[in-house]
Image 1 (cartoon, rainbow, N blue to C red):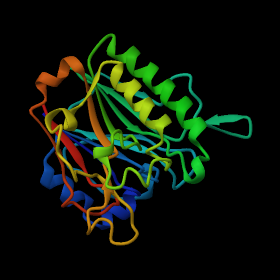
Image 2 (image 1 turned 45 degrees about the vertical axis):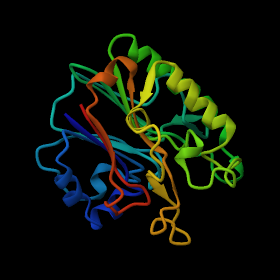
Image 3 (image 1 turned 90 degrees about the horizontal axis):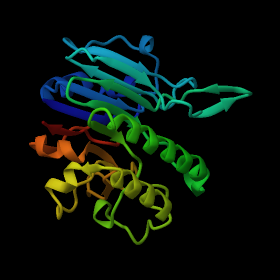
Amino acid sequence: MKLISWNVNGLRACIKKGFIDNMNSLNADVICVQETKMQRGQAEFELAGYREYWNSAAKKGYSGTAVFCRHEPIDIQYDIPDFVDVYFGNKPVTEGRVIMLEFAAFKLVNVYTPNSQPELQRLEHRLKWQDAFRDYIVKLDKTKPVVICGDLNVAHNEIDLTNPKANRHSAGFTDEERNKMTELLDAGLTDTFRKLYPDKREAYTWWSNFARSRERNVGWRIDYFLVSNRLMTQVKNAGIFPQITGSDHCPVGIEM
C-alpha cells in the first residue's frame, strides 16, 4: 500500500501546475492533501478511481484538508472532537485541519497543524491545539494503530532544517513546538523517514519563496508520516519527492 501526503498551498493553483499528472505518476492508494484553500465545488477536476473526502475551512481560501483514496473506509471523522479551532462571533467554526479515515488495518489521520505565524502570534493556540491532537491520537491508538500524515509545521531536530541557529526562535522551530512534537512521538509514534534515514541531511519538504531557497535547497522538513510504533515493521520505505513542484512544499510518502 502506497500513501502520499502533500501540502499543496492552494489546490486550485496546484491543479494548474500539474497536480493531476503528478499524482497519477505516483500511483498511490491514498493521497492526503493539506492547505486546499477551497470548497470542493470551486474547481472541476477528477482523480479517476479515487473516492474523495473533504474538510474545508469555514473561512474561504484558508486552510483545509482532503483525502483521495481507492479503498472505501470503514469510518470517517472530521476535526478533533470537542476542540474549537476558532470562534466567529460566538459561533465555533472549523479550520478544516483534520480528517480521520479508518481502514481494516489502521486509522489514517490527515492533518494540517496550525502555524504559529510571524512574531509567534498564534503560538499559544497552537500549543493547546497540539495537546488536543495528541490526546485524540492516543484515544484512536487504543483501538487500532494509527498513521498520521501531513504538514506538522515543525522541524523537530536541527538536522531537519538548513539554518537551525538562525531560526531558533522562529515559528516552526521554537523550543515549545519541538517539545510538543517530542510529546507526540513519546505517545507511541515513530517518524518513519527519520527512523529509516537517521543521519540523512538536506532532506527537506518546504522551502521559502525568497532568495531562490528551493533552487539552493535551503529548506525545512516539516511534512511527515508518523506511525504507531507497532506498525513500523510494516513500513517498507519512506520518501520525499523534491522533484515534484507546484507548491512551496513537496510530497512525502510511505509504502507499507
